[in-house]
Image (cartoon, rainbow, N blue to C red; front, side, top):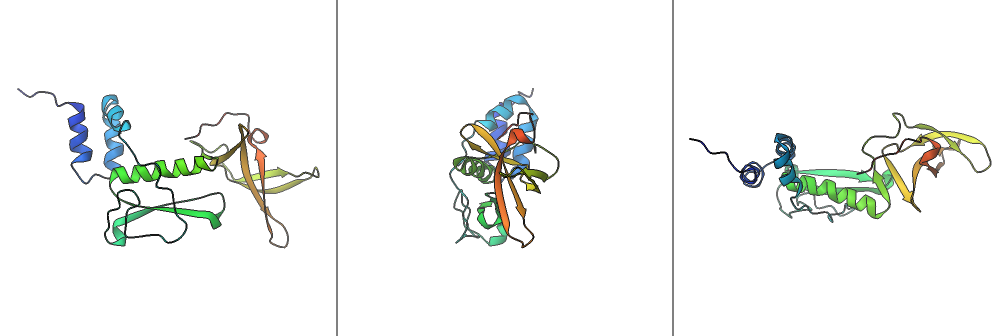
Length: 183
């Protein structure tokens, strides 16, 4: 007669005793609610903030394991401007991959930038109100908001005829009244 295996043992076998990947982590979270709850209470590193320079491409930023550079992945994210792109090098183990994502979200929150669960609109083109009352056509980052004084702002940008780059924060309520969900 076979006994039912305890969920925490299933999680340990599935994730902790294998060289499990992010795919195994997501599969485990889908098995049932009890297993998902066990996986969700695991401890993750949340302070491995991205770096802009002097990257160690052969070392995991989370567990500090060293190997060949092609054994690692890199999570790239920016602070609205490609000039300020950050990188978190991580190995392919599920805990390091998830920790890299949580670290990115924590780093973004530390600079008052919050990633949206869904874009607030399907396109990046926007009309940008100017202080002189005119409207400029430009683009926006539709996947994140900046929080200032308890209000959400959209990062918008445009280029003039000379190719000069301009940016402006516009209140989110200017583009949508639908509340947004952030991570």
